[in-house]
Length: 199
Length: 199
Image (cartoon, rainbow over all chains, first blue to last red; front, top):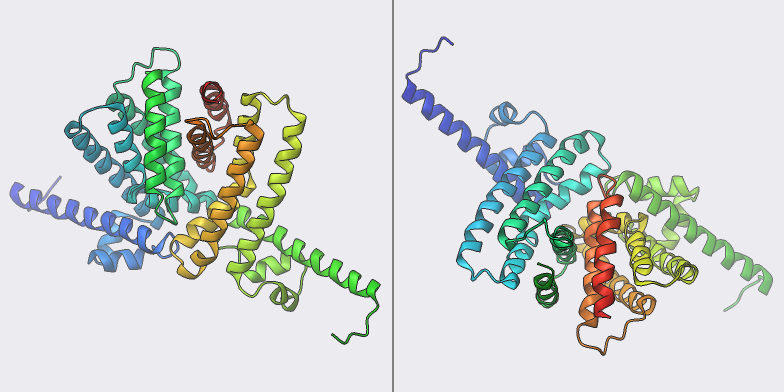
């Protein structure tokens, strides 16, 4: 490809481009958490990110594309963060299940929930969100298996891991309108002991 | 109170009034399920119910009031329906947990989810929805205890009932964008066996 920029300039441009993308995605998640799907318009996000509408359109053609990319980006970051925290805890089943429950009861879940609910009645958005849900679900399952040191070839172990993830999803939902942290901790503690027996 | 209507006419008026309320609430739930919160405006609901705007305003002053009443109405109806179905099944723990999971993975859950998510970023709506969430949660817990014939004075039983409800809530959420019925059945079966040991 013919270009009049030096390699260093090309690198700098790529860095700036990545930085713009990151700013847009982070502003999107903040908007989703603060204002919900209806309040997360491309105009509001561009303003919040301090990015021109032209630059935004260069990176993300539609609102759906932008929001899905933002939730996926946060998902990847959250997985890294969770792995890092898992290295710091003692590794007991209770501690790991508490970490996973905290990972769900976070901005990632709130932002994803806004997106999932909007996608239910928006066919175009749904085509973007369904594959994202599959990817995030698969990645979270893999991570849970790894952190719990679970051997899924043993009967019942795969189901027990899935129960863990569906349970923390249900608990995260119960935490959206009011702080349900105290009840969550008690239930997680109880489930973790049952899970330990299953593993 | 001075009135020129006979008792029979008063009764007829009360019947019509109840019927109008019921029509409005049913149209609201249908709108929530089909179009989501954003598409559930008072105008759309009145049209769908075939009720004049004046009559609608007489029964429900705000959109929030209408939608919360509709979800509560559906909640009460669903509890009755669930009790009726529970009488018809064999009463095994698996059968009861499957019934509860089906109760969650229904229009009631979808409508409530729309309302809960909208309330998160709408302070006025939130003041209506939080007490409703508490009432529905309490009622569902009581119902689960009754159907499972659970003795909550035994250690661990209360937690096991709560895990059941949070689990089916998580499973219902996983069913919003795609049909997750097959996986749900397998997980419910596994959990029901664990629950049976706890009870």
